[in-house]
Length: 251
Image 1: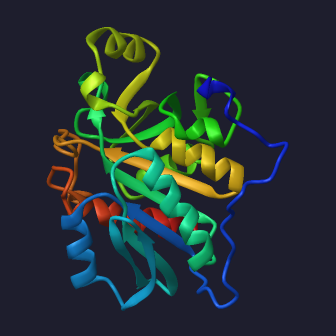
Image 2: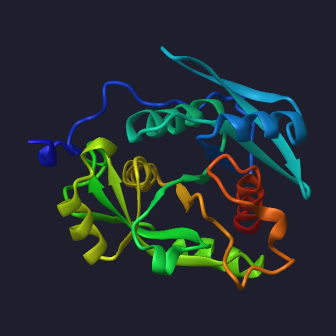
């Protein structure tokens, strides 16, 4: 069974091996939006650091210089297997131990998440990737959620803490499963967090994830200090500014 897949008793056939001349960065920012990638490439990037390759083609990794720090940035693809694998590939191309992961997610509890960044505290493992990186369990904890929350608070960004539901198949998010996950404390549903966190735990990396939804940041308490960060929508370039502030905060 897939829940018995984790094997720490024998070596992997293929392992990421860091290049001796791999560039050092303070953190790597990863997102899913092609529109945010275009915005970053045109407005923040100071050239390219590396390339990640798979059958889908080349993924450029951009350099961002910010407040005296060096950050990497790239656009990944939807789904835990490829998102996890591309981060594994960065372990060859970059010297980095901190990863900021952000993107759109479904909101399971509008009453508490409306107008706020969703900060996951644990991820329900309704996918396959995580079972290759850690023993079976219902959830994988997100240990750095406190740092993400502290950054949001410091920047005046409304946020809410809660569990997330990571699924491999959004067309099979049934009503019964929705109700179960919501009752269990999940406030969001997405497709990557559990797999990426399990891999980061296995590799000794620090993951700092947050999610946004289409009605993000239109809460009444939103003030002038935070308006620079968002106007709503998963392709909102303001979400990158949140990620950049988070990268700066944790590095």
